[in-house]
Amino acid sequence: MIVEVIGEVVMPKLLSYIIDFGVDGKEDKVPAVIQWIYRACGNDAFVACIAAGMILTAIIMMIGGIGGAYFGGKASVNFAADLRADVYHKIQKFSFSNIDKFSTGSLITRLTNDITQLQNFVNMMLRMFFRAPGMMIAALIMAILMNPTLSLVLAVAVPILIISILILVITGFPKFTRMQTKIDELNATVQENVSNIRVVKSFVREDYETQKFGVANKNLKEASGSAMKQMVLLQPLMTFFMNITTIAVFWFGGNMLLDGSMTTGELAAFVTYITQILSSLMMVSFLFVIFSRALASGKRVAEILDETPDVQDNGKDKTFTIQKGDIVFENVSFRYYKNSEESVLDSISLHIEPGQTIGIIGSTGCGKTTLVSLIDRLYDVDEGEVLIDGVNVKDYSLENLHAGIGMVLQKNLLFSGTIEDNLRWGDENASREEIEKACQSAQAAKFIESFEKGYQTDLGQGGTNISGGQKQRLCIARALLKKPKILILDDSTSAVDTATERLIRKAFQDNLKDSTKIIIAQRIDSVKDADKIVVMNEGKITGVGTSEELLKSNKEYQEIYYSQMDKKEGDEHVL
Image (cartoon, rainbow, N blue to C red; front, top):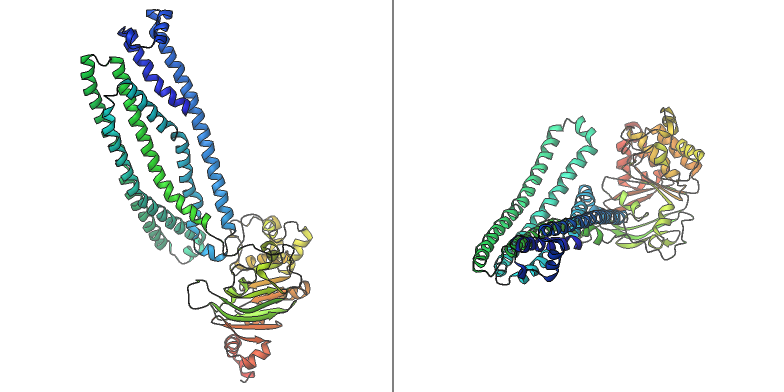
């Protein structure tokens, strides 16, 4: 860029030599070196020699420009790649509560569109940051040296231009911030619709979703239009001042030309320098426009980078691993919103012994999933502590803690790739025999083998080409491959028939005798044979015991039990 700037400044001066010396023959107006070139080349060849010098300068400028554009582009692309990787890695460290602060659509926009805006700014900055200010300063110096009096025109024009640019940029920033927010909303609408397209079609809600998209699209259009309307004033404003300044230079310069205080070549060169100065200001103004939008995007990206993960990997001893699966909740309380007065979990105390099968049951929203999420540190407790094998879960490294716990979440999530690829999330080094055994335990082997490609069957994004029950069994098999000391099943057999569920539970008893098993369920059949059943209501434990014990003593369990059992069985248990 510096090479290109030097060339830009030299070219008008060479042109003035051609006009003043080669055409007008005014030897006193050119340096001695130009006079020497004139004598060496002769009158006829002088113009050709200077022209050759201008062509050589243009070639050098072109090489500098190409180099600047290439390295500027390369640097900006690598910057964006590094930033995108940093943001993605930061998101991977987020706890569930951190992720809850950002919508999926917003995170996608920040990783893509916002970082692209920053990439464009860096590219333009690297290409113009040296060139535009450098050319403006160099051309300004050359213009002042050439004619200080005529340069006073710039003392009026340049400050007015700079103030106008700053006003446009400052007022445009909030509008670009609003525009990026509307992009968030549009992305969230599209992502939600595409992810749930089967539900949309089954309920014939295409018109509603189209209307919903139309509103988001219109909001983005209006926000973009508002931001762009202000920015479109920039180029006409710059062009207006450039024309006015050029007219003023010709007016005053023409008078100087007439009284002999300025030559034709100097006036031509001066006009070129004025054009370069104003063009540089225009380039800087466009850089500010891009900067205004990039600033809005940069703020949004910084919100992710500045977000402090609620769950910190601060294990005191990295050698701690889960050996037995003994779990203790000691007076645990938890709130999703820390300034909320009401707790999701309130003073929970519970002991789960190693190897036990524990069922957790209760009404929807009573805190069952939240309770087990504290074991794996998907959330951290607000009060009290959770102990595994006598060690606070916060004292384990997250890697060792998660390695010892297998968890099948309420929402069964699979990834694009083959069935085997998804199963290897449990153990990437598992043998084919271990994979097949886990699938047999999860009652998934039969339907997998029915596929033409078996374990190499491509699931598509999220496993859209298999049923809900098949997804659940694959997720269970994936968790079993970890050979966890603690296995948590969060309503993960709800789409499986009772006979298949019974076989899965039997496989747990046979293959995971030493593992602690926690089963969250809505169906009594899923937990009634557990060693203990924990009954929850409104964030509290209201009862712990076997099914028979709870039928005698716990009102909530009785209501759930009799609502699911047939009338005859209900009559046999007189309260």
